[in-house]
Amino acid sequence: MSEKQVNNPLHGITLEQIVNNLVDVFGWDELGKRINIRCFKSDPSVKSSLKFLRKTPWARSKVEDLYIATQKNKS
Image (cartoon, rainbow, N blue to C red; front, side, top):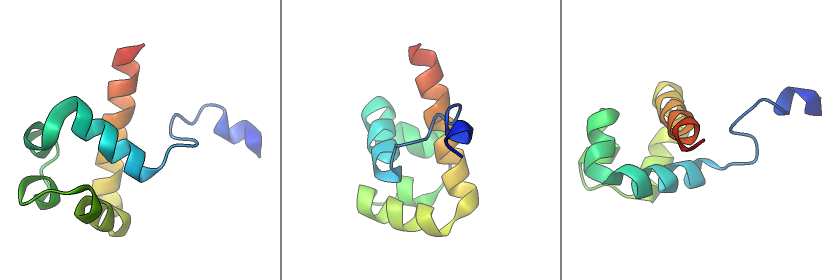
């Protein structure tokens, strides 16, 4: 089972860490432009974003994809 996690770039990283990293890299304004969801545009906070992303799989997927793309660019 651990073999499946070897190639998973999100293994061991929490959603909160992902959101915080993206906010550090892009800031809320740019993040709201890249991923068009209201929790990034209207009075954004990590807490409200996590609440929304945990309930909304399509939005979480977009956030995770952007995080993975930023990590690949660092390499």
